[in-house]
Length: 409
Ligand SMILES: NC(=O)C1=CN([C@@H]2O[C@H](COP(=O)(O)OP(=O)(O)OC[C@H]3O[C@@H](n4cnc5c(N)ncnc54)[C@H](OP(=O)(O)O)[C@@H]3O)[C@@H](O)[C@H]2O)C=CC1
Ligand SMILES: O=C(O)CCC(=O)C(=O)O
Image: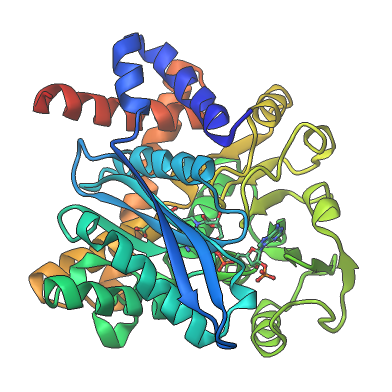
């Protein structure tokens, strides 16, 4: 089953509850535009490097399309379409005035020098600049991209269309970025985790947590939850991970990871593989890396009572079904990781108003939207007797569907 077919099942579960017509389902599932471009650069050794880039614009019924840009060797059209559709439901669920899009280049960034990475980014913008922009489609960071990459995007876009920082979000603070964007996704994940624990009457102090992925989202999630008194007992990155049943010293681990470009060998820990982390005995499991990691094989062995989907699309439908049957609570990606796009929205607003917010205001507004969204999802799930994922889709689909009908063709 393709990744989009799998994501489509989640869509269909909600559409069924809503009694959505077949024609409306087809319209909402069909992407508006799919770009596939050649991204050719000169390598440092003088050779040619040819890569494939994608930008898939899924739906603009509620506003300009919004979504991250992923640089990863597993990027392909099917995955980008899946992620673009998730952005449509996510922006609608948290009620920010956007549609959904996603982009990516199929490349292993670890094999690129900083100069090659910059040339690749600029070349990608050369290929797609006419299709993006502050009122069309606004890229942002995702796996393998960061504030520096967003700065190059803004600079390259400006060469064609004039200075306009609102054309991309997740930029460095010195270049019209927003205070709090870098931490935003992890903060939102942490906030949701704390709220779910509160609702489940579990004390966050001493709650054991395992996190897969220690990049932008994983580190800020770990930091937020560690600061609240949770015990982060295991984390992994692509090459494996570290485990300490007494709880990891997260600030030290972050410093270590920056210095060593990875977490392996962190003092006072046992090594743990990605597979073992996912089935470890913890209260809360937080996938914060690639998609599809919770699957038919490992789902029966997952021992956590709560799964918070920081990554996009980490759970395949069969695993989701098995978790629901076993009453394992899953907070879905389109809610749990929405903090990033919410603060991207604040950045875009600030860029358009030429008025900077301070960190306190960003955090306050982010926390408010995350908690209000979670509350609404929880209420719908209870009222309709559906999972938190289906409730999230019901809200997201409902908003996009109504905007489509009101706006007309
Ligand atoms: N950045 C954002 O604002 C948002 C991100 N997300 C989602 O969160 C997830 C993580 O994104 P982000 O933190 O930005 O990405 P980063 O590139 O910053 O970090 C990714 C992390 O995942 C690890 N990783 C990569 N491949 C694998 C693998 N096959 N198995 C286990 N670990 C792996 C990486 O390890 P290593 O460093 O060793 O390569 C790294 O620790 C993605 O699913 C993304 O779509 C969702 C919303 C917003
Ligand atoms: O910040 C954004 O605009 C998009 C973030 C993103 O790609 C995501 O939420 O998956």
